[in-house]
Image (cartoon, rainbow, N blue to C red):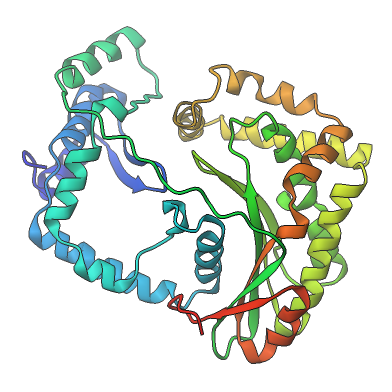
Length: 377
């Protein structure tokens, strides 16, 4: 910061038994500090300094740039990254959610002044959230917060409007050519819902039965019965403006088409027939149990509260979560699957050696090919 060089920050953290982390994603960025409760005021002062007075020393900027570019080179050899990047670009088009990572040339062109400008425009108390979890007096900690953050003034960031994602019609295959690959990364997906949608809990439970848990139908089919892959999985990613549903697995090249067939078979079965009472009860127990474990630690509570406030959920979201899951029926699951498992319009991404999988890919729709840099071949 303008007040503390890196070494001073490290020394202050050690003195307070503290730990520091920062992150950024599609919708939010975060600074997190943990430490001994007796040093709460010092920890809050450091947090405020980082939020309000960030500096961007040239040498540190260049170091981070070099590391980022090296990381991008590695990512572009990783099938999972390439599949995620291609699916996001396909589903979101010109919306910023399409961007998973920049190109090396973009990072090379970044200037320190651009970071400073972005920081000045976006880091403001008007769009900031402070969450504290620990063993402390609420009144005392609020006094510290008011003392340390109360004078923070900055204009709210300007609202922005982004293009809507494209409408997908029909299954299409997007093949990313990775020469010499002995496996195929399979990823299929469609736009879905956010946490604020009335169907959210129904969709969570439907996903758990389909492929979101280790005892799911997808795992039983293509892992346990057929041995195509070790860890197939499905999931719902809820961003602030849009959500998307995905199914993925890494499989041997020769069973790529067979794997896709079973993925669609299980998806269509979810859309056609009600789940069994045993599956329903098992999924309800699994989700409520995972939720209970998730709020059993300080980090877990912090994460859940962040989700509630950042996604603008009802204030009783955490208190009612288990009851709402337990109240769901087989008909609820069937309806959610029919509405949000968009089998007919799924976008299919395959990352692998096109010589090994191109013929299989063509069985599932028109094929467009790309290289590892995202350029159409």
